[in-house]
Amino acid sequence: MGGGTYLGFTGDFLLKHHLGVEGEVQWRAHQNLYQGYQPYRPLFFDFGGIWASRFGKYFGAELTAGIGASSTRFYTGYETCSFVSCTDYTSSNHFMGAFGGGIKLYPTKNIFIRPELRYYAIHNNVEFAGNNAIRAGISIGYTFGGD
Image 1 (tube, rainbow, N blue to C red):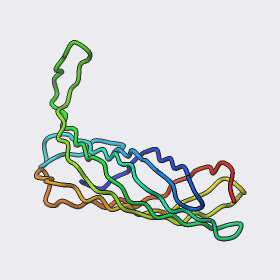
Image 2 (tube, rainbow, N blue to C red; image 1 turned 135 degrees about the vertical axis):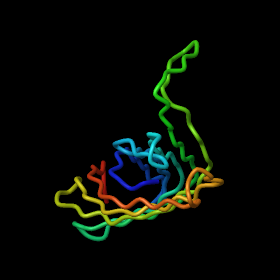
Image 3 (cartoon, one colour; image 1 turned 90 degrees about the horizontal axis):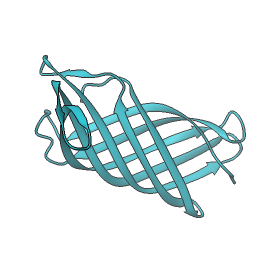
Image 4 (cartoon, rainbow, N blue to C red; image 1 turned 60 degrees about the horizontal axis):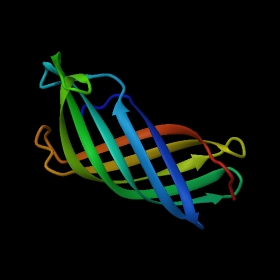
């Protein structure tokens, strides 16, 4: 999917003890070139389950697993309009499984820094060389409540 910087939003809600639900959306900050000539931008959407726990005052961990979709937007250079809106891209969408984890470092009671790794198993990803994508990153976040 070309590497680069991804921006996104993640949210989770613990339902019982350390188990809950989570969701995320991540998109590539800048367009890349597909086969050297066509601008594109991948997006990842997923939701699923989460196990999260805090270990002491400064550390926590989380593991996630879920399902979602990969949407690659190929920019055409011209607009196509419908009754509702106009776009300058076509999308190639694929079902995917999403798995990951992270370590939360708490410099304060509720603010965390999370190095994380996500693995996306993308079904029938014919536009690229394989059906797998890996995203490594660092998130900054806030925990409401807490242990």
